[in-house]
Length: 611
Image 1 (tube, rainbow, N blue to C red):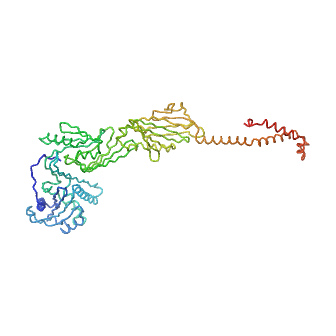
Image 2 (image 1 turned 90 degrees about the vertical axis):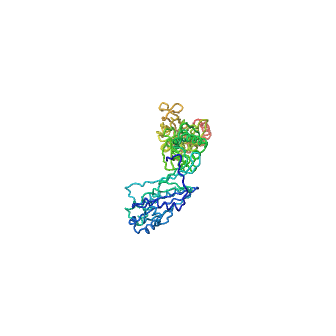
Image 3 (image 1 turned 180 degrees about the vertical axis):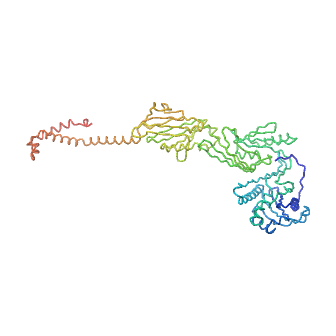
C-alpha cells in the first residue's frame, strides 16, 4: 500500500444517526436497475471493537424480479441469515434520503456485523465469504472447476510510535461480497429465478465510509485509509539461511525527506536490541537473529508483531539423513512498523538447507525446509554368527556444531527401524558419535532392515552349510554415501573361523576395509556342525567310560570265550560225544591250572591294551 507522508484533511465527528441516513442517500445516488446496490460503514472504537453496517438498496423497478415482493424477500433473508449478522428488515427509504438523492420508491435492507476486536471482525468476514463459496460450490457444475477462495485480510493500526503517527486501515473485501450469500438464499426460497441470481446483488457503493474513534474518513471499497506521518519500512523480508534467520529492511524513501526515514529506522532498530544489526547509509538494514530467544520472540520484538504465533514441527528423514522443519505462523503482520505485509522464505543459495514449500496469505504462512546432516565419518562393523546370521554396528560421527543446530532430534536421523536394534551416543571433544546397532538376523531379514535404514546397502552370505564349510560374505555399504562419507569397515568372524586372504577382495589382513564394498571368503565350523561333532565326541567318551567301568566283566567274558574255543580245538571226537564233554573238560584241567591261567591272562590284559 502506497501512502503519503502527511494528510491535511481534518476529519470531523459525525453522529451515527446522520451517518446512516447519509449512507442510504449515497446508495440511492448509484441506484440502477441492475440489482441491489450495497454501501457500507465501518466503525472502530478505541478498543478496536465496532460495527460493519451494510445497506442494500432495492429500486422500485427491480421489484418485478422478486416473486412475492418485499415481504417474501425479507422472509427469505431472515430464514437464511448467517449468525455473524443481524438483520433490521427491509423498509422504504426515508423521504429525506430519497429527496437528497433525487430518487423515489426505493427500499433498503440493513444488516450489521458487530465485532469485539480486529481479529473477531476478520473471522466473521471470513465466515461470510466462505458461506458464499459454499453456496456456489453446491450449485456449480463440476465442469466449471473450483470456486475461487478469498482470505479476509484486515490491517488496522492506530499508532503514535516513532515510525507511524496516525491511523492505518486496509482490507481486501467489499460489503457486496459480505452479502453475496443473499443471492443464493433468494434462489433457494424461490423469490428469484436461478438465471437472475447473478444480478441480485449489484456493485458496492462508491460512497462508503470509515469511522475510527468517532472521526469519519471517506473511502471507497475495499476500505483503505492512511492518515498521519508515515515513516514505516517500505520493504521487509525474513529469510532462513545457513547462518541463521536474516531480516532485511528498507526505509520508506519518502519523497523529499529521505534523511528523516533513515534516522528513524536506524534508531528504531537499535532500540529493539534484537539480533546483530548491520546498516548502510542508503536506507537498508540487515538484522541477523541469534539463539538468544525463539524465532517468534525475536520477530515479535523486532517488528512489533504482538499477535505473532509460530508453531515449529521437525521431522527426521532417516532415508536421506535430513531434518524437515515446518513453520506455521499466524499474526505475521507489522502494521506499525511495515507498510506492507513482510515476506518470509528460505534462501535458495544455502549449502545446508533446502527450501521445500512456501505458502503465505494475509498474515498467515507456512514455510518448510530440509537441513542435511554433515557426517564426518562412518564406521561399519559387521559380525557373522555361528549359524550364518548377521549383525551390524554403525558409528556416525557428527561435528558438534551440527549437533547443536539439529538439537536432540538429530538422534532420530540415525535411529534404526523400530524393533530392529538400538542407538546410543558418545561425546568427544569436537563431535558426537551416534552408535547404531542392528540386531543379528538372517541375511534376508537384515537386508529388509537396511532397505529402510540405509537404502543402497546390502549383505549376502553363500555356502554357509554343512559341518565345516567354506563360505562367502559380500558387504555393500553404498547407502552410507548418501550421507556424504565413505565408510571405514571391518568384519568379525565366528570363533574357530579364518579368512582366506587370497580369495577375499577389498579387505586387508586385519579384516578391515576402507571402501564401500568388500568380499570375505572364510571357513570354519557351523553351529550345526559343532553340535554334530559334539554328539560324536560324547558317544566315544561314553563308550570308553563303559569299557573302563566294566573291564573285569568284559575280561572274564573274553577269557571264558577263549577257553571254550581252545577246548573245542583240542578235544577228541569221543570227548565231544553228547553227555561227556563237560565231565572231560573238568577232569582234564585241574583247578590249580585254571587259577594260574587266569592270573597270567589278567596280567597281559591291561587298560593300556584296551586303548
